[in-house]
Amino acid sequence: MKKEVAEFIGTFTLVLFGCGAAVIAGGDIGLLGISFAFGLALIGMAYAIGPVSGCHINPAVSLGAVAAGRMQMNEAIRYIVAQVLGAVAAAAVLLIIASGKADYSVATNGLGQNGWGDGYLGEYNLISAFVFEVVATFLFMVVILGATGAGVPTQFAGLAIGLALVVIHLVGINVTGVSVNPARSVGPALFAGGTAISQLWLFIVAPIIGAVAAGLLFKTGTLDQA
View 1: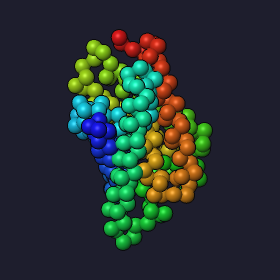
View 2: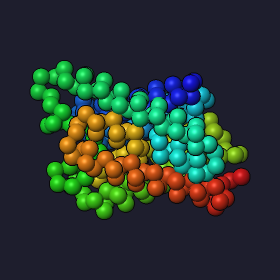
View 3: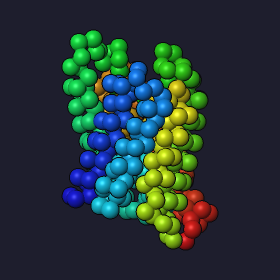
View 4: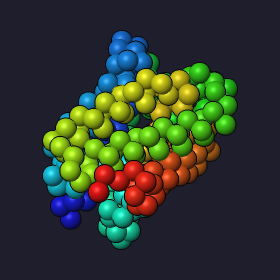
């Protein structure tokens, strides 16, 4: 259970501090600050739990690792369960904290949930949201697999991966709020309800497509350094 506990803690941290930055401090730190909150949370966890579980903290990453031949599906399933539970727990804690402010309402202020369309941030359409999530997750997975491949100085992997997540958020927050991580989307959506639930499918399907596509490129040797 050691690896699963690590994945739970890592995903909990990412969602609590990433989504928390948007919900609690977004008005003060802006898009740049939120982007760095997600990236820095990932960097911290990469060095904290990376030696234990590899710090996937993302179901799409675990499935991408399976596609790349670096993980078995039965282990990936255990990781995914831990990741989703960690994200849900973090969203619950964030809701409790945010609700301590008198004028907070999850219906009005949200919980950092992902989305698209009328009324959501930049109001980009479904196609824009889907394409962004697939492409961004694909490139994110390329960075992850490349930075952790054979012959690479892996002590810098956490930094490279975390900074990639920062850049993805800088570009994509106004498009979808940035998922590239089904667990990160599931947690807040369960408590936000409504549109967040009805749109959740995209933030499960699109990241998985992107991550698995990247994994297959490494599996075939197209990008694998080995």
